[in-house]
Length: 184
Image (cartoon, rainbow, N blue to C red):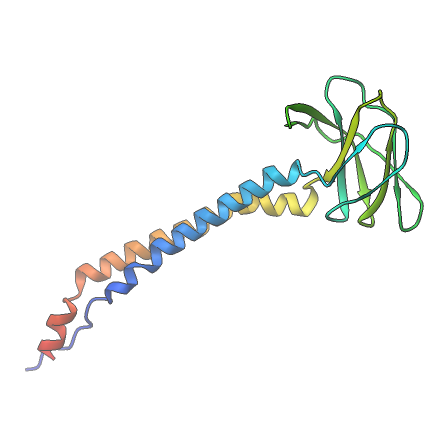
């Protein structure tokens, strides 16, 4: 009577992959979290708020935030599309956004949808004041990033953990590789 051959334990290299999957999941979650917070407060241009038109170039088309110094009512501003020369509609932001950059507090005064990357920004404030403009993480980009913050760590981390458990069970139920080779 012959004994049925049993498969040997998985190679030791198999223990490397599950922790890597977990680390990649956590890393992607951290990347999305950093993108979520830095993307919201990105500054593409800082210009004097002297009432004069200033050409600016933003990193991306779409929703932009116009930032002014915190603590005073937002000054009147205009934004034009450099390509078409058309004025763009300035809307109040959907929430209250403040940030501190270089020791100065800023508040988001307006949002604007930029159809092109070249714009003309003009704000009329007190002498010496400045205005900033930068991309606002919104819409599908915001949703994707928020989902990524939670999805990557849980999905990849969970898959890596499940892989480790299954590997441990397989490892414990099979004979060592050296014993399997000598028995065969």
